[in-house]
Image 1 (spheres, rainbow, N blue to C red):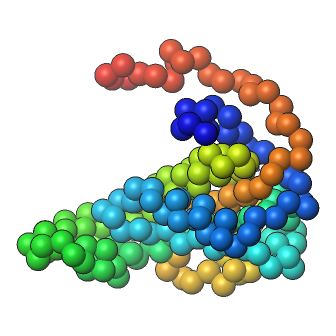
Image 2 (cartoon, helix red, strand yellow):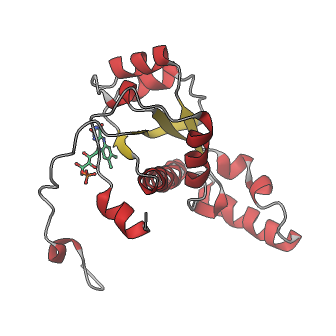
Length: 200
Ligand SMILES: Cc1cc2nc3c(=O)[nH]c(=O)nc-3n(C[C@H](O)[C@H](O)[C@H](O)COP(=O)(O)O)c2cc1C
């Protein structure tokens, strides 16, 4: 499928064929593609928790507004991020670059994040959003469907997946085969309202 068609036909699909299963390799291929999304300073904040345990899926659904996607889609991913990547992983993610580049990046990153908890969190969320969207488009490119979700109790899900203190959850993404056609797109705001030329 061409990228344009994948973008046009991606919908937030709610009803999944629960009998359809992706293999571990197929899931991993999608996750590998998603990980090619950009991340701020190449920090790769994102951690994907791929939930395959049916019991855990059911528990997540209980704290997730009883959304059927959470149990019925073939793949459920909790998109998380390590908020202190800026402090912990700089040398690792710039390994291979010339030493002067590594030193420059280490300084720039420290300057950008240190003492700025909101920036640290915002950056993690931005990177999560791009990876989530890349996952959804990768899925669509293979004829699959997806749904991004933030309709759940974040604290309860954090407990269920043993989220470490230095991580946050951005959203979940369900991926699978649609069981019903999504309703036609509605309520799109006018192009002229949402596209601003040069300045507000
Ligand atoms: C951050 C975010 C959270 C969302 N949470 C949910 C959710 O919990 N459940 C759901 O069914 N759809 C959820 N959606 C999907 C939106 O409702 C959907 O993308 C929007 O209505 C537009 O429909 P479309 O994606 O099919 O074009 C979410 C979307 C985003 C971006």
